[in-house]
Image (cartoon, rainbow, N blue to C red):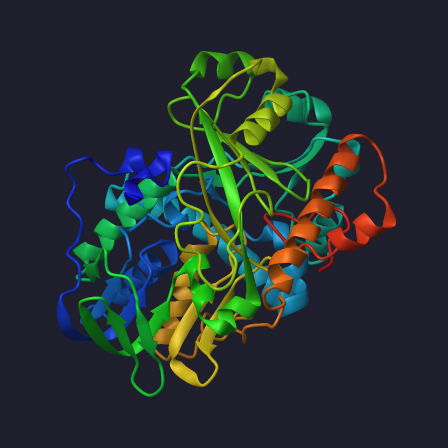
Length: 470
């Protein structure tokens, strides 16, 4: 499949006559080889060149930069404040505050970088609304809000139903909290802009160059179909595709995120009161997330364990192309915005999400392979935090001892998910229980005990839901 068909965003971001970077042909060497041309890989490359301009940095991408999850997500650039409880548990209170604040600063820094580098990524900093669309979801944010307040941190504003409905354009929203620092981007345009910024700094990028083998002991060697790269350090920035490596496979589960996008309708959005680029997500377990675009469309996604997910340790192309559940996602768009009537999507797509148990990424070196680094597990919130991930991985690659290389998220990969076939078939049971739990909440019912028990195995997602284990 042509990677430009992976999403509406990528089709919009890549000009028909734009040439790919060359594929690797032959054997080369580098100081650092980065595997993956998405946000994590590109921000890492840019940070490395900013700190050490003479460093020889090579980046390989199996398709084209931005063809993976970085070019087909919802475009929400958010901080980690919504995940503060998990941060506090993993890192301790003071470090949690520092990392949450740093992640918020990253959202602002992305906009500043785009302005400086003349990257038209449609950056809009109009905030994020964590909303409730049924009674059960109301106040799902209280524990997060209160935990941050214990450290005199107040990143959120409480909104009542009238304000939520007026700003979001839908009376389905019953309450919410608002984070003013949230932003949105055209995600593929950001990825392609980072690609140009990396090239301008002297990063050697080889597209259409998949990793076929990694020799990680001693000095790492990356093998591709037509060449090899010997490097002092290798950075695995492969997102969900990193599950091919057993330690990563045990630490994350790959699920689909499915998106539909409408035709442009700016006048209708104006009439509804949804007049800016505010991003919105609700409090259900199978989260809904939605926003407007610069040209007046609505992009509406359903995350979590909804559609397909891979069996075994290969993502492949199973999560490429149009979503298989477009009708279901569209029906939820219509349910959330009854004011729109029977609006139909102009396009749809799907992509993989690398979900960790805690909803936060892992950074570090593979066990027994100190020169092979990883950054994985963003759990549906990577656009903003990948900027911070690039700092962490750059410091690790440069063997620095600083606030990034020694931060609380630099940790060994967990053994958080079972092997196949338990993972696959157990996941189906958990997905069914989650869907029934959400349906019961919409109907004002309490799910049965078995359903509650199975749903309790759901990993964390974009934001905490009521009853989530931290």
